Image (tube, rainbow, N blue to C red; front, side, top):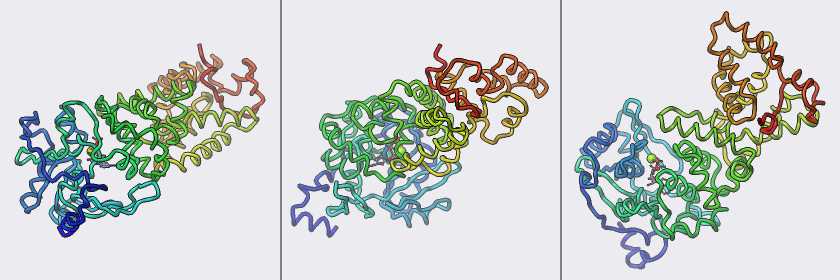
Length: 463
Ligand code: ATP
Ligand code: MG
């Protein structure tokens, strides 16, 4: 209140971050825009209802409203309110306050979690780094301020499910109809404040099939290097959202089109610029998209294992070619790639553990003699390792026969398994790569004598 008075006296509103604030919203009836009564989840409805009954404002906001108006099924629902996190917490038995940068409250209903955030203020003198990135913005504000600090107009629509009322401060409804992604406020300034917004452009454009409004698009190319200032844990979160959006490949192409793909991950430059790795990652991402669209869960460990496999494989291949024993060489290659990766994008530790296991299992699938296949049956990550193996076969990196054999072996009744192992040995492929290599074509790396694994490149099995 007092700040607004001072602002008015100093005429501050006309410039700086506060220039984007609009005090008045356009109002629509939800039903008039095609929102069906009951389209939002019970949990979201009840969250708003409880808050309103306690005398607060409460709206569904963000992607949930946007997707409803587009006739898509919302992934989840966020609620915005004028209640403070403590007030929210006290109203819901199953809730907790989370977040460092900005406190929000998770309200749990059964398996659904509603993220409730308090209206956020726009600060004139927010603390920023030397490129204009906002380092702290932990101040509560009014709804018009909250609307102005959201990223895109289509993400700043507020829906009151009890009153069936939509508030639109920035012509988001018009932009939805035009299928145009437009940033709120001055594009350059908003991308400087938070470079993650540029990645979000790519995600929404790919997911929604929208075009980027020209003034939103113009500064992106020049500001793309600011991506490297994003804290690595946050970059991971945002990249994961992009990869599990159900439109992963389209997102990556969009990143490339906007010049945003450099420096995110070693794999990105590689997938998009070198044909070698492309088939593998394309196959992996197509499957991820299919799973997401079918409503199946995605394991981030598996996903990142797929994305970082090519650099691991290449390093491994080089070490083995130089005479290193295969298993330690694989382990070293993994360490090296993960180290390099961690500087840019911090994959969480528990996912790293999954990735390492999936990768380290790979050479073991190539040994189909004696007890080895049985030992694998007991491995806790067998399923993920096997899925990864199949992916490698489908991408042409390994012979299809190997993947097929494992599919049969896993399906087989216990008493059929010995016959399968015998068959693999007979055909000469079961004894593992070591023998196969000795007897086969000179690869120039056949001197890797004690190697229990092949390290095939995509070319090895072409045709
Ligand atoms: P999705 O359907 O993928 O969840 P979303 O728009 O809901 O899309 P979230 O990341 O869940 O995206 O964010 C919820 C809302 O918070 C956004 O719609 C937007 O209003 C706001 N928001 C999120 N990230 C930013 C950001 N970096 N800058 C400004 N506003 C943001
Ligand atoms: Mg969301």
